[in-house]
Image (cartoon, rainbow, N blue to C red; front, side):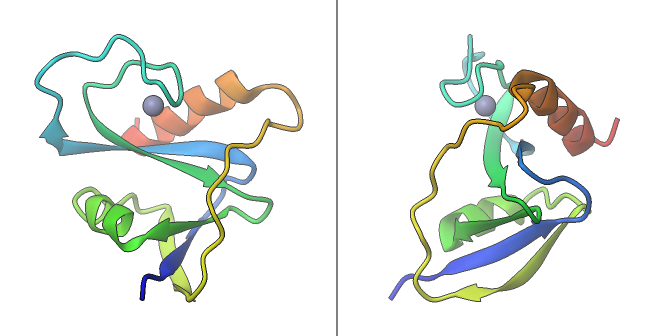
Length: 109
Ligand SMILES: [Zn+2]
């Protein structure tokens, strides 16, 4: 039976947090990511953090994250019946700006 793993970001909430995986480069440069509209050079995991900065991922996503684990993320617990992950609109309307900030944090710049 599949299960999810709840992760929590140390500071961010209500934002999409992207995690680039440098060890999985794209062979062809991406024009625009279908998920976040930003071109990625490498495989990138998109995490939609909720009100408390947590997100539930599958074992497969966890395995990918393990290749480039961001220090801001910690694994909280295992979830037996994970809800489907949905994309929600940012409440304050500054979604693009938040995406950019999340990318910068993900790179540690
Ligand atoms: Zn993206």
